[in-house]
Image 1 (spheres, one colour):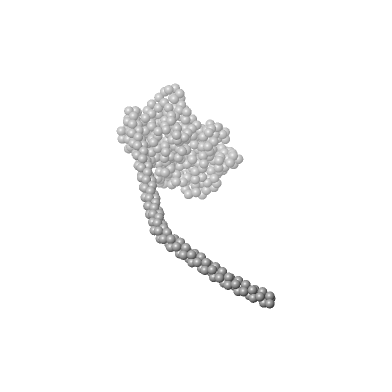
Image 2: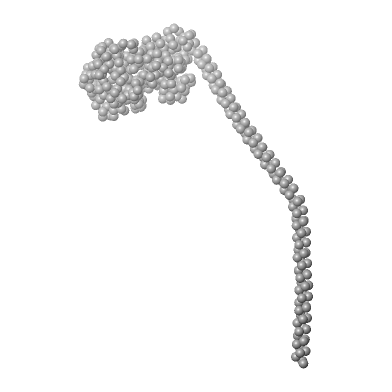
Length: 440
């Protein structure tokens, strides 16, 4: 009995528990639903508010972006304008600089013109300069001075020129030391100017045309020059075509030492400091000392006849007194058609010609007519004066001058000037003694 009651009670407890669980689940479920709904409500509210905020922010962002775009556009425009202004400024500065350069150049030209006029006016108050030189008198009297008068018609009809060599140079030095009247201008080969006469010359740094010449054309330099190169004369082997066939003519410098020319050569006196001294010094660079020594001994053994100048040697070849000589190219370029003297251009090594003479001009420190002397030298170095030099058959020192006697036109293709032996300029007397030692 008791067991049935207990069972009944257990069943009732189970039912009560089940009901409680169902009730509890119902209650919890309701709460959960409420929570979910509340979440949805909150999310909805937040979403609504967020949408409202977004709707309010979007126009602001759009405005900000618009402002940024405008700023970018303004910055770009400003940079473009500034860039354009900078370019315009640079162009303006360039034009200003060019204008300043033109003004400075015009000022220099005006100053130069005034200086030229002042020099000419000072020259008019003086006598024509006395010139000592080794330029042929007919060339000076018949060509150079008349061309000078074409530029300066007020100059006297005749210049004062004395042609001479060693004796005249010695005379000038004696006159200078004694304070006696002497030459205003010395017009000699570079070897004479450098070796003997430079101590007596004055600086002429204001010479207008110094800038159009290579630096080496002024001695000792272009900043303080005392002498200027006026013309260049290559040394060449010449022969009389009536006495020597072209095929038998010397083929080069070394052949002059061949015994077949014994007693048949006429040359400038090698015992003096002359053009021949320079020719021999330059040839040593080409031959080397041993070969040069052999050449010099052979040349001396051929017993050349010595004369006072290259022009005199040329005259003797022209007259048929000698078949062969070492001369200067201007004597050939001055010939009339049909003259029986030709150049034996070298075809055997060394294939080249020495610069026999580069004539220089300078003013004495004791010149009695210094302004007239400056005016004449300035004209001589001008393109007009250089053309006059070309008319004498000499090659103008102004290498850019277009003239039939310019070196570029007179030297055959493949024949070039030999380099100068600079040791000669350092000690001309030493080289005079060396060359002289080979000849009796």
